[in-house]
Each structure stands twice: as C-alpha cells, then as structure tokens.
Length: 136
Image 1 (cartoon, one colour):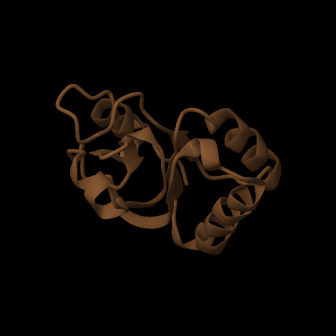
Image 2: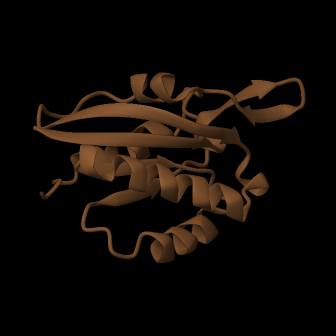
C-alpha cells in the first residue's frame, strides 16, 4: 500500500467566508475529510505548513515547502501540495529547481472555489492526484 503526504499552504481551496471576504481557514485534516477515498491502494497523512492567501507567498515559504518534502521524502511514496492559484506557477517553478532530483510524484493543486462551498471544483480537483498510479 502506498503512503502519501498532503502538505497544505492555504489558498482558495482552504478558504472560508469571513468578515472581509474569503480567507484560508480550513486545516489539513479537514481538507482531506472532503475527499472520498477512491481505492485502497494508498493511505494519506496530512501536514499543515501554513495557511495563507497565495498572494502572500514568499521565497522563504518555497524553502519551507521544499524542506518539508525533503524531511519526509523517505517516509512517503508521493506528495500532494495544496496551494492558492494566484502564485501556484511561481511556487511550482521554484520547487522544480529545489526538488529537481526527486524520483517520487509531487503534485501541486488548488481550486477556484473553496472546498467548503456546495458548488466547488476543489473536491474533484483534489481527488485527481489520488487517482493517479503511484509508482515506487
């Protein structure tokens, strides 16, 4: 059985409605609870790295994400990083250099509508990485 780690950073996917609009507020375990398990080929654990709007993403956070993958690399078969869509491309590019020798899947995903909303794209999007075969 494959063992995956979901690292959460905030973004729209983890947002809730607040006094001033949307703000990240859904914790890692709660985010995972919205996803139905597709099969028995994996187990999923979670770790919350930060809970920020992706417009506040900074280079030091890229380092934190890369370090979390490196620290957990030997214990897991793959990684899912949830992220806001505004700066996902920048984070993806930075991580591609920081983790360029990784032989395991590292998937970065986010959504346009929070997972807590009834008509969200997040549930379907978040299930996609889990449907992919994880190769050893």
